[in-house]
Length: 475
RNA sequence: GGCCCCUUCGUCUAGCGGUUUAGGACAUCAGGUUCUCAUCCUGAAGAUCGCGGGUUCGAAUCCCGCAGGGGUCACCA
Image (cartoon, rainbow, N blue to C red; front, side):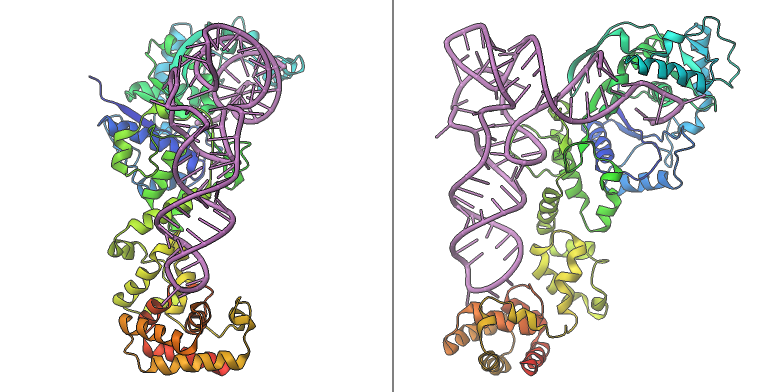
């Protein structure tokens, strides 16, 4: 049996956003599930739109997400090269076959002339079809003119793994360009040649190509090729739900998500479940489960909106699931500046306290800064507090003095601190909302922090007491 | 405009003729977890399944119209 071979074939014109990644992910899942191969091919046939470094960026993104490819431009493989710009000879060969069989011809018109035809059709409110203007006696192709496919319009029915049975009439089939006048092939031609030569079994692509499929089918026929299995993945929509997600609508580079501390596992799970599910109510899928359970038939037909809230939740979930030591390693580059002189033991204690609060790793500094540096007293923390804001300064002062007196006697173990804080509640007759809030604010100067006793343990006696003094002197 | 695709809570979705008073998750709101934030737990609100016809004893599920959205009609992919 032929082994399953899928490919991801981006053009190096920029970074990869979630939409592109999803296409890659689905192809990767299909290949891994079937124990086949996943191939990366760069479609760099448009020199004008090419962006320097984009190819490397794409490869970095795939690797960062763990979407490893078996063959690719930087990896080689039995069907190398994997860059279309290096495969021009191939396209020439196949083009020659078409010329020989009378299925390709040189386009004698200037672009201005073609544009005139187009305008004419547009004015008449009918779709532009080049074949209506097909030259009767085209000149021999010398490579300086575009080479066009001589189409054979007919209706087609075909099957799409996601969308089901599809069909289209002959009116959509046209003489499209195979090779541009600059010698480079168009996508329409190149991908068909490459997929055939590379023995690709499944084409998974966005729905912007759907309207062209009949043209491809016509070309496959002319080349004597059997079309691969096709699957059309719907677009991911911008948050407003109107148009497809694009870079200009704020679609972020996936590598930027990684830089903000979104975990690859979370990103992969999120992107997979955007438009796919296994038919059950399961939400969290490990990579192994995705490979095992993924199927193109369960991919949603309609477009899905990108909901960052959901990604945030899922990422937080994956962060919470991580063993502390593993999280500690991942968080290495995210500590606040002030943490650099602290040792691993201390930082791990801090990390354990904020693990359940982290939605993404880049939040670490704002959540933990007070563990590493004394922040200036912020009077608003008290004045804005529901209960504390109502108390007179003298009352606050005396409460805090009592707290200080008790804590001075403590050995700052969790057990002792908890007990003392409880005693303090009875002694002062105050509710936790008042007493604990006050001490918490005094010792952290942060609007939010982990629980009081836990925080004090990590902060330690000396630092806690000196901060209480600092607060006292401001009252 | 022609052609093609799509349409279930705000969002992601389950559902493939009857077990559905349409289920779950995110977000929202309320309560609980000795304090804030978060986690966790419980609960609430939230979709006449785009609309209109049919078929059927019975339809979110099948058929036909319509509407809305998207894609495409490049020497871009």
